Amino acid sequence: MFSIYASPLATATYQQNIDFLEERWTKKEVINFIKKVADVIDILKISPQTFQKWSKDTTIYKIEIVKQITLYYQIKSKNVELLLFFNNLQDPNLLHELL
Image (cartoon, rainbow, N blue to C red; front, side, top):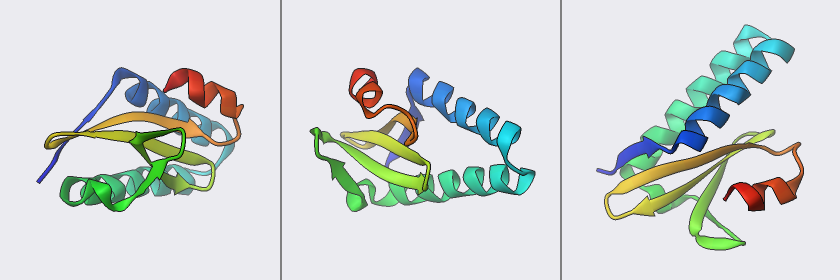
């Protein structure tokens, strides 16, 4: 079983995405996003290698939580570090700067 922890950036971007959903979407969409993140974390605890490696850095994995938001993470020994919840509508160059 892997331990999961979030970087400060992951914590901040997770909250930013929730704030964005609360402003523009329904409560149902917010709950759906939170549930999907929890489901992904459950998978990461057991088998973090399940998801695709990021083509720009193969030490980083990615998983699309919802169409607009992708989670990037790294595996370190028996730990999974959540790095970033990236809104896919943002400039992709920003992703390179953040990771």
